[in-house]
Amino acid sequence: MRRLDAHELTGRSSTHIQRLEEPSCALHVEVIAPFLELRAAAAQAGFDLVPVSSFRDFSRQQFLWNSKYRGDRESLDRRGQPIDMTALAPAERIESILCWSALPGASRHHWGTDLDVYDRAAVPEGYELQLVPAEYAPGGPFAALHDWLSEHLDRYGFYRPYQRDLGGVSPEPWHISYAPLASECLQALSVEILRQALREGDVEGGEVLLSKVPELHERFARRVEVPPTSALAHELRDHRRMV
Image (tube, rainbow, N blue to C red):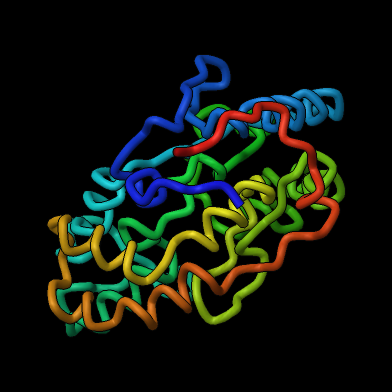
C-alpha cells in the first residue's frame, strides 16, 4: 500500500493531477493512460466518450456545497425533484445535498480517479446536458453508451461506484472510477482526515456538519459498489506514486 497524501486525498493539493487538452479534463497521472485506452475503444464502437467533470479541488466542491446549502443553486431530492433548501433545518439540508453532491474533502473527484462521462456524438444540436439517470436509461440519448460501458469498463480498470442506491449517494450511471487507485484512496480517507479538511475549510453547516462526520463518512464516502476483481487487477501504466 502506497502512502497517500491527506491534502491530495481531500482536494487541497493538485500535485497528483495532469491536464489534457483533448478531451479537456484533469486526471491523476496514473489514470490518463487507462482512460485514453477506454476512450479509444469507445471511439471504435462509435462513441465520442468525453468527461463533463474530472478532477475537482476542495475549493470548487466547497463552492458547490455552499451554494446549494444557502439555496443559491438548485438542489434535487432522491426522486430528482427540486427542493427549497431554505425551508429545511441544517441537518436536513446536509442530507439533501449529499444525495447528489459530495461533501468537500470527501469527493472522489478530488483523487483524479473519477469522471462523469457522456457521448458527445449523441448530443443533438441545442441539447442541454443534464446528467440525470433518464439520459442513460432506455430511450435516453446516452442509453447506448451506458450499455457499452457496462460491458467494457472493467477491461480498462474502471467501474461505476454509484450503480445502485445503497442508502448514500443516488445512482449516477455517468460516474466512472479507476478502481485500482480509487480503492486505495478510499481506504486512506479516514474520518480524521475528512474532519480536519472540514475544520480548515469554510463549509456551510458548521458544528452540525462536524458532529455528523463519522456517519457521513460511512454512508456517503465508503458505501459504494465493490469494484469487480477484473477492474482491480488492471495493470497501472504509469507508476508514479502520491507522496
